[in-house]
Amino acid sequence: MSVIYNRVALIGLGLIAGSMAHAMRRAGLAGEIVGTARSAETRKVAAEIGLCDRIVETAAEAVEGADLVVLAVPVGAMEAVTEEIAPHLAPGATITDVGSVKRDVIAAIAPHLPEGVHFVPGHPLAGTEHSGPRSGFAELFDNRYVLLTPDPGTDAEAVAKLRAFWEGCGANVEEMDADHHDLVLAVTSHTPHLIAYTMVGVADDLRRVTDSEVIKYSAAGFRDFTRIAASDPTMWRDVFLSNKDATLEILGRFTEELFALQRAIRTGDGDHLHAYFTRTRAIRRGIIEAGQDTDAPDFGRTHAKPRKAEEAEG
Amino acid sequence: MSVIYNRVALIGLGLIAGSMAHAMRRAGLAGEIVGTARSAETRKVAAEIGLCDRIVETAAEAVEGADLVVLAVPVGAMEAVTEEIAPHLAPGATITDVGSVKRDVIAAIAPHLPEGVHFVPGHPLAGTEHSGPRSGFAELFDNRYVLLTPDPGTDAEAVAKLRAFWEGCGANVEEMDADHHDLVLAVTSHTPHLIAYTMVGVADDLRRVTDSEVIKYSAAGFRDFTRIAASDPTMWRDVFLSNKDATLEILGRFTEELFALQRAIRTGDGDHLHAYFTRTRAIRRGIIEAGQDTDAPDFGRTHAKPRKAEEAEG
Ligand SMILES: NC(=O)c1ccc[n+]([C@@H]2O[C@H](COP(=O)([O-])OP(=O)(O)OC[C@H]3O[C@@H](n4cnc5c(N)ncnc54)[C@H](OP(=O)(O)O)[C@@H]3O)[C@@H](O)[C@H]2O)c1
Ligand SMILES: NC(=O)c1ccc[n+]([C@@H]2O[C@H](COP(=O)([O-])OP(=O)(O)OC[C@H]3O[C@@H](n4cnc5c(N)ncnc54)[C@H](OP(=O)(O)O)[C@@H]3O)[C@@H](O)[C@H]2O)c1
Image (cartoon, rainbow over all chains, first blue to last red; front, top):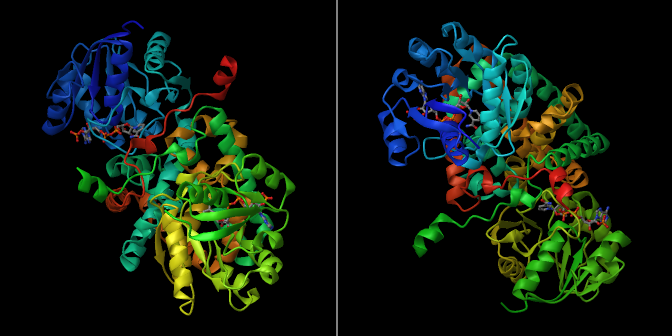
């Protein structure tokens, strides 16, 4: 793979930007990677582990002379960052973001950009529950989808270049309309996260009653929810506040279906339950066949050892 | 480890009974393992893979001379199986079950048992989304909890022996009251499963609109739900019908919390959302420290390759 951008500026150095840095290096996609983050602490860690070729103190400085600028901060911080960097963007540069919501983020970024800069909004559908400058890894995007939602009038070459860049990072790239993106993601990501947070919150209330039972006996299904509900609170607050309409729409459908199942339980309608639970199996098969998850039982996870025991050994 | 029961009879040969057979052999806990299942097909597969020492055609035959009888069929089938085997149980034998619900299962089994047989209800908190005679493995119970819910009047020696047996299978054993079990499991397992089924059902409806997008773009959180919602429909129908009260109670709390979060999204109350999402993180840490899950990002799962590509290679 050869160099696609001579200088890439990463604004924000968390899970996504960090993984992009690793993936770019793996494939040699960038002449130079310049990075910056809000806090001195994150910049220090990033410098220590050599995450970028150069770490600078401000976003304004980071974008100087960059031909690709990546905004990798929480959705709610996009506007302020854009305002800071706009006067410093190089003419002809491409600016993209990795925000989990598109319509609101576009509305926050686009109005501040100068003429002659190409804005190609994006969203890599890949993540883990971890965050921060140490959490990234080169394989995060391998065989995952990146959705680009450019305005139809956007420079075709700029879009093609960003597509090649993400493909170089291991991803499959698709383009779609921003509103459609927000609806699909409300289904595949935002509503599931809200539900997981809610269920874990309910258990947390009950935990006060039953001591640590909820934790000890979590293996029967609940612990999967806790992984999702361990994601970054700021990121997710921003996602729900900015993808309000689509999330509320899907939540409405969800509660409707939940009430129907609840009613089937109450009335003892086993046929309804059985039919519903049979239908949902097919989706899992589809996901495995599409290469989007492992078929290994329980995600192939190995049984964790109690930390106590490890400490005793070490 | 030495032999604890001279003859163990497994009624039902699915994930749980199969894993018990493997675990018993690993530790040499049984003199002989006799197994049976409802269908000729399952018995044939079990015989082919040597799951038990002996496979017999009927449950009545299987329990002859057994000093431990394990009922490992769906919760709704426990009563009929008990009626079939009751006249054939050896005096002094212990009978246990592995059903995911305890109060209803006890009510289905206990009245049919003859005098002189020790009934110790149980529930291993371990499972995967797979089922059938080929799905079991010896490590399933390692470091997992098994909950026993014997009546206070039960023979202490019989309980102690079953406890030693499960510990020999790798598990941690605890005793509790059946009603309390059903409430705790409604939180850690039954309600999460219902919610996952519901969310996947909503997505399935939407998939008809958006083609296969829900599958392609599942990696952002949704696919974890699909694993849970791929579990056996019969097992789960039975669980909800028999743990009706506790499930409905926890569902009530869940919808209450969900509506509060929904309202916070609608009114733009970011502080409420942020506080809620911060609180739920602590539970995840507790689970990892208790050795009940891995700390590896995304459960340490490896990225699946598309099946198409594998087929092309093969
Ligand atoms: N995590 C996922 O699963 C995932 C997946 C796809 C897309 N995304 C999107 O990717 C973006 C980044 O997420 P991430 O997971 O990489 O987050 P992360 O690991 O938490 O990193 C966030 C970065 O943004 C900086 N930041 C936070 N608040 C800021 C503010 N108000 N102003 C300026 N900088 C700020 C942080 O700086 P400090 O470290 O100095 O605080 C940090 O470097 C978000 O828009 C998110 O929606 C996330
Ligand atoms: N899977 C879990 O995660 C999990 C965890 C803890 C406890 N449990 C409990 O363990 C029990 C067994 O679950 P499993 O996962 O091992 O199920 P499984 O893999 O589906 O196996 C169920 C077994 O029960 C037999 N069976 C089904 N319906 C029957 C009926 N009406 N009469 C007689 N036999 C019948 C099946 O026979 P055929 O193969 O011939 O159809 C099969 O051998 C259930 O009570 C469940 O609640 C399950």
